[in-house]
Length: 322
Image (cartoon, rainbow, N blue to C red; front, side, top):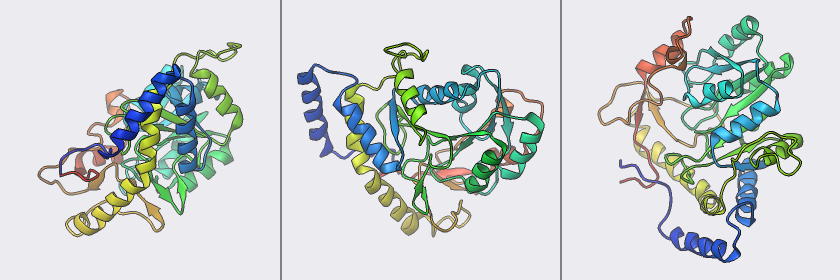
């Protein structure tokens, strides 16, 4: 199956109309299409939303709002380096937690031990591959009990849900990516989602240098109107894309790959990745092939993360891919 971005040809006309409207308006940023995109993403997630030019900008806004500089933040080792790098760039110290071999996401049992060892101020949980972390309920409850900030890395989780709840709904904040390979993409871009109204207001200032009183020491992480227009069109297709992927997985892939990652009752994956535990020809490789604790040369072992790196592969699954 050939990689394809989930953008229908007939939507090109809609995007051109938006571009003409933006040019005519003479407002190329911070105007109606950014607001419209935020409204659509909020309706999809069920959470207030702030659009950013990148996942990284949104992550830094959350980390700095919660004042995590000089503090320890726990992070799964089975993730992209963007997750630990966000902590480092915010001035924090990152330590790693092992994953499960079932869902490839943060291990609740190992998290408990790492909380006792490192006394963190915050935890990143990463929804790997397009599904919700299987232990998210227990992780969220533990963080509430311990007074630990819970951040959700939702970069893969477009359209994912568990009994109707979308990624980002369990933590203090969730951060999505709209990079070029994602289920829906704006080329570059991200959003922050949260029920915390004070964080919403902080993030809105953070992405725009802290204007206008400069009490928030932010930088430029604004999403342009052109990017936001593309995002709005894409969000309109998200349910269709996720339904198509799930149908294709059930009909075509599941019978062929019995040793696949399997989901609990009530969970729907956005299928950013279709993950199997058998080596296959023509795979798209691994979600990640080297754990972050190895990249950062931490002196401890995380056996499940090491096992996962060597024992999973991704079957091509792209919306209407050939």
